[in-house]
Each structure stands twice: as C-alpha cells, then as structure tokens.
Length: 349
Image (cartoon, rainbow, N blue to C red; front, side, top):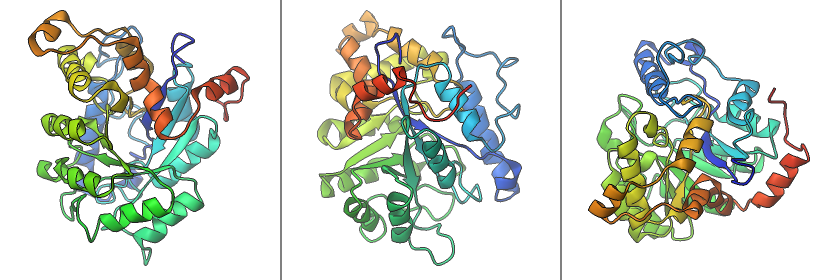
C-alpha cells in the first residue's frame, strides 16, 4: 500500500522463463535479447530516476533465467507498495518452448500467495500441444487452476490470427463466457518479437467488443505505436479498458511523452478505464514507477495546448488499483485488513 492509504493492484506481473533451456532455437535468442533490453531501459531507481547501466544492466545478470516464486514475490511484494497483483501467462510458443511466462508458473505464484495474487491463464488456438483443444485448455485453467481471466497474444512471425475471427477467436470468447470469465486481455502493439507490427494492431478488438458487449476487453501497452486507435476505440466502447503495462515506466526515459499519454486518456477516455501494470520483474521493482505516478502532475503547458485536465488524487487511485479491484470483484478494504493482520501467503523475505 502506498503512503499507508493508496490501494495498489498491479494488473500484470510475470513468472518469466528466459532460460536457455526454454528457447525454441537459435533465432529465439534474438527475441530474448530484445525482451531483456526493453526491460533494462525502463527500470527506475528508488529515487525515481532512470537506472544506470552499471548498476542495473538487464542483459543477463540474473534476468535471463527461470524465475522462482520467491524471486518474484521479493520484487513485487517485499517493499510493501503492492497490495495485490495478477500473474499473467504469455504463451509465446513460437519463441519459448513453455511460453514467455509459462501458464503453470503463473498458477504456482497465485497458489503461493492466494490472498495477494490472481491467476490469468493463456491459450493460443494455433499452438496447442498434443490432441488438446483450446476449449479443454481453457476449461482446465478455470475449473482446476482457478484462472480469473485470459491473456491472448495473436501476433507471430508465422501463424498469426485476428482477434475478430468469428471461427477461430469467437469460440474462445464464448467458452470464456460459459466459464464465468468476464475480462479478456490482449497484447497489442509494443512488439517484443520479430512478428510483423501490423499483426499487433488493436483494430481487430473493436468488432469483438461490439459482438461481446458483456465482456471487458483489456488492451495492453496502450498498443503503442497504435495509441490513437486505442483512444478512439476506448472513447466509444465502454467495455474496452486500457492497461499501462510497459508504458508506466516511460517516465524514466521520456516523462513528457508519458504525461501526454495520461493527459489524453483523462480527457478522452476517463481514469475509470485505465489500469496500472508493471511487467515486473523484467522492469524491476514496481515501487519507483508507482511513486513517480503518484507525485506526477499534468503540466499547465499540456493543459493549455491540448485541453488535458489536471490529474486528481481520485484519478490516481482509480488507475493504481481501484479499477482492477472493481473488474475482479475485490474489496480493497478486506485486502488491506488482511495485510495488517499478517495474512499474506508465502514468505517474501
């Protein structure tokens, strides 16, 4: 909890497996290096400044490995800033044998910290093992493993698929509905593999959001560089929410850009449909980004030029945790009370 008062619910953390053993082949090393480079660029120091390469290099140095439950808990929870988090699977089976963030590992993290972590499953209809169907995989992840959401990554170097494909994608959404899942999440923009950028456009979310009005479609990374498309879709469709994953660490590189994004979102979408997500541990401990965001203001120049509103404390509370809590039926007061009583799950020391 921030300042003993602000509930922080991180939409996305990952139990990564960036080990050599998990790489599909030699070409996967290039993708992995890209992942590590992105993470190292965005790590902030505890004083809110950009991390310096000598002290936080990122390439290797402990990041290119299989992360453990204890390791991730230490990064996310040890400093007391984050109250809850969602461990999200990323099933990049064309790059990593068991996925970028393996489904089973995310489940294990949620099991270790049941009062603090929700499990988000993941499937890809074109990358299924053995005779397993996508419907079977989804059912198992929900009924046996307790998945509360699903994360989809549809853009690949080969075998990409569209999120508005009525024959391939829609049956997955219908299955999710039958299983009681309300929130579907999508990696959009923010290319982290050699997949063509156009396969990561968010435009294929719009029709799906229209056809499934009772479901919430969460677009990650503000779909950069497709930010304009994201804003125009979210402004018109109340069941589209935007996740700041991979962008909330921009202040350590380009603070003016980040303030511009936030100002635009406040003006055209509203703070009630924007979610904080850290991508920890690849981006380092969440604390520097959370504290920077809490202390930020929308510069008067940006307000005057673009009509952006000032950012209020209520806006910040919504984005940092209350929106995520509402989406998943979490009572922040009970979580805070449990934390004060020491009911936190596993050991983070």
